[in-house]
Image (cartoon, rainbow, N blue to C red; front, side, top):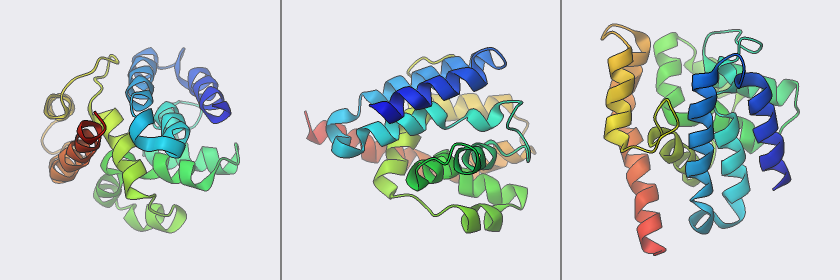
Length: 183
């Protein structure tokens, strides 16, 4: 639980005042992650901590490259000296590898941060892709549509989400199947 409280406080300090809508989303993502305790077992705290931290790279204090997964993960690694798996989860969350490819940063991301265990990444992706920008729970398809509505078709985020959508939905479905199996 110590990692979770530290992660929550760090995210609050970086997002609450400067990016209140992002902070609302982050709170919702962490709430979703906390519902996975039964299916994640010993990894529940790690995933919940990553949910709190997944978008800290948007903070004006941390944004260096403009690619928030990489900026957040670098901060966690270099400044906070955080757990390597936690850093990898933040670096690779929610289709980040595809967006890195669109940005010409795929090799940079892959070289700096190992791909995390897929079951943990799926849990973080589930939490992110079922939480709207205001922190409310919503179906993954609606969340993905909402992201696409915010970006023009030629925008790299729109292209990345379009490319990664099947994998993002697959990740969400895999977690939902785990939840169903535990009921």
